[in-house]
Length: 150
Image (cartoon, rainbow, N blue to C red; front, side):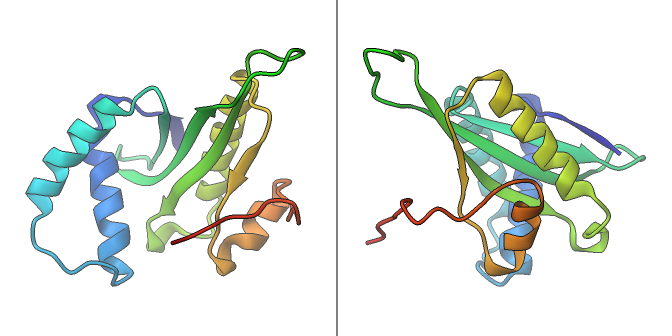
């Protein structure tokens, strides 16, 4: 298994995994996959500074999982003028390979990047079934983290 930071050259693999996730979960039933792939490639190029993708490949070089680290700059303080935080997004492993450690490898790569970037904190908004996965690598609930949704 190989996990690496993805680039804009990996747009098709990333978009394919994203398409697979939303269609297999029943969130989308459209037939415009080719249009989505083209849109996704443009989106990835436009957001390359703030959305850092990672891919997992099986032994045959097929993309079998992905995870994203969204980075955002925070308001500076007098004592810390460079302040950045992160949010983990769109973690996905193909169903036939789940529970084989691929998600943990992806998350390890994402968190290594977060450390390298010296992020103040990293958050994740998780489905209930994935909460134990995130807790195993050190994520914990925080009663001060609130969110608003329209």
